[in-house]
Structure formats: structure tokens, C-alpha cells
Image (cartoon, rainbow, N blue to C red; front, side, top):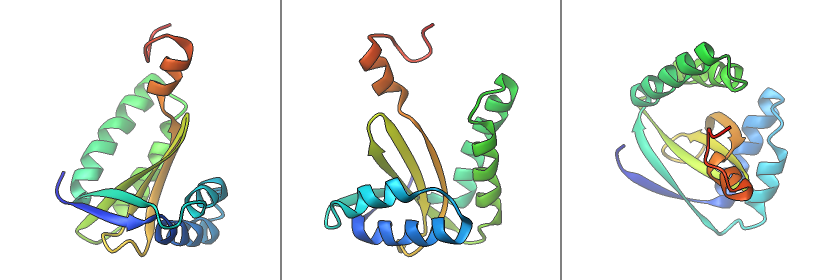
Length: 135
């Protein structure tokens, strides 16, 4: 990944609220969480849009093969990344343990282009005393 950028949580909350409202996406809990500490800093990792596409196309293939529950969400993510025409995006990760939300934000922090929500398996493993993937 390339450079790091720092955004105020309030700015990301505003961009996420606009993104969710425009698409009817249920991101309100994440917006509320970000607005609880609007002056907090969030670090984003900037990389080319092509980089993010390569990574998440590979993850989508694996999830599809395994018939993982995340496959439909990964498919929407890849579609949003394909539709985005600019050169780069910043990945910002927001946590509400054990939940995690990955946000792909324009490098200026003005717009959320895509998101992916899930459970941080590392934290689930800590809570259960088991390693991720251990049955």
C-alpha cells in the first residue's frame, strides 16, 4: 500500500451518512459510532483502485468457491470498485468490537465509494479461546 492519510471521524461520518442515504444502505450504527468521537483521527491507507480490485477479486473468488456468506457482499464491493473511475482510494477501518467496517474513501475524504462489514475473527477467537478457522 502507498501513503497514509488521516481523516477526522466526523468527516468520515458525514461521507458515510451520504453514502448510506443515497443507496439505502444500513450504515447508521457506524455513522453514530463515528459521530460519538468526531474529532478522533482515522488513518486511511491509500492504494491504486487497481490494487484494491486485484485483492478483492481474489477474495471474491475464494469466497464463491467456499460458498461463504460474505460472497454477495464481496460481489457488491468489487462492483463498486469497478464503477469507480479515479486512480486511487483510501481504505479506512472502523471497529465496534467484534464488528468491523471497511470503508473505501476518496483520498480527500469527501466520499465513501464502497464498504464491507463483518466480524473481526481475531476478536471472536479471543472471546471463545479458539483460533480463527478452528472448528
